[in-house]
Image 1: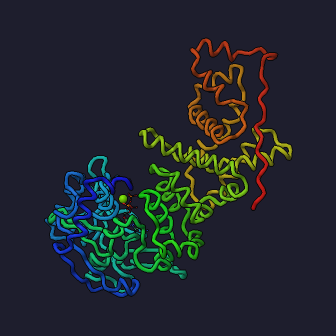
Image 2 (image 1 turned 90 degrees about the horizontal axis):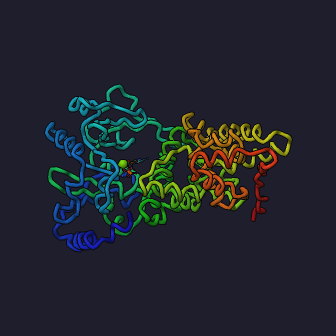
Image 3 (image 1 turned 90 degrees about the vertical axis):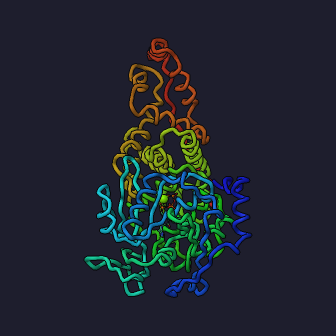
Length: 477
Ligand code: ATP
Ligand code: MG
């Protein structure tokens, strides 16, 4: 993604754009002074079509239709957020979000194929076949007496904040400028008008795109207190875009990181999917460790990583493999990556239980249960993922059996592929498995009859499965 910024096409556009400010319209927008004093007066830059590289060709028909119909209905409508950011970086947005001054109810009146979702943050989903366009009403300031446009959410109860400042509900509507200031990062607060082809920049987003800087809008501590997930977003976009984190945006993270403990486990799971299943999990993990945030998502894994280098190697290998699979457009499942993230924990529990006398399979089963129960106190793991995780782990013991009919049948099992890939991952991370992975690789390649002959063993020829040893933890420095 970062590379795209330096494509010759983009550089020429960007340099031209930045060096020819004479052609840009600059307006000063009055603003409720809840942001830093520097941002109390927001300078709106309007960049005309010939000074940016966004082409309507790269915007989905659905998004163009939504904007056009909203405008025909007398409303404002802009493409916003990641789509504008990625289009300016010459990338391909994965989805298209639209901001408007129409209320959610207004939007659903215009589109039969739409529905309002969310409570904390009400938005409208407009569906075109498999594509969903997200339409959000401009957000306003919570202390500006409701909103800047005179619009009120019907039914009241539109904004709520916890004693610690966490935003529990954010449905106060406002103006375009207020909406820009309520977004998370400057590079995520650019608006594109598909009617006039202009880009609207209230918060120096273009400048930060050019500087390759992830910068929170407003006072970092206040913005993280309102919504601690923004810290995870800072890290995610720094990893995804290969940008640096602006010093003040970074400096407030250690002061506010503990607030992530207040975030509901279900929301953290949604965020986990964005962090680790979007094609840049390895660099995201590095950043989460750099900013010491992994402990709020997976505290037990974090503790294992601190004690044992091999735990980190395994998790890093899982992230790298996931990124490779996504790059090759192969399917990935949260179950596999979660199985890897919790494997060091499961292994530690099962070793402890075996040492206290449990049989290996019972120890593994109880260890899996314990690891999952503990993890879901922090991050939800839906059953449709926790069940396959347990199967992948338990399969690691079953794969130790190299001979006999039962072993031969394992290859036909629906969980074999994932379990075998997991075994290879453990080996890749340096875990001692007595070359089990190589054995299963070779045996799979044999024609079925030969495989059965190889595996149909007389008891005397059976190779005894050896228990894999856990490396002794390194002493904590
Ligand atoms: P991606 O490419 O991952 O979809 P995105 O920037 O579109 O990136 P989304 O999670 O889809 O990210 O959010 C859309 C937009 O909504 C963001 O660009 C940002 O402007 C705004 N936004 C999302 N989450 C927050 C938040 N927690 N606080 C403030 N603004 C937010
Ligand atoms: Mg998006």
